[in-house]
Length: 141
Image (cartoon, rainbow, N blue to C red):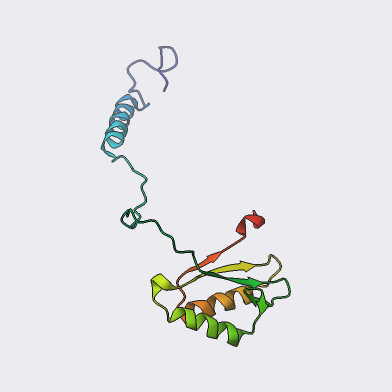
């Protein structure tokens, strides 16, 4: 914003600079209105938790360890298995009701091929296994 104070221009000439003060005032009012009208964001995650019960859970969790070593060999509870054997084990688990299925703990080695891990996970999904988790990921951080 500039202001001419005599001498530089001819007297009686129209001023060619635009007066931006009203524009700035309107912009500030609009900014304040937008800030006021924006709803407050609440960061909440909705989780369906089971209802509380007073009965203690005495049932030990049942799980199977499914490992893939650095040679891409699949181990079921420490014993080497083929893909057909693995499929039959997982199909037997998949036929059980969802609440009674044992948990499958998948522990791939850091040097295991992604293709092998992907194939094992695909077999588990096709077999109907719903309780599967990765174990030992903290070693890769």
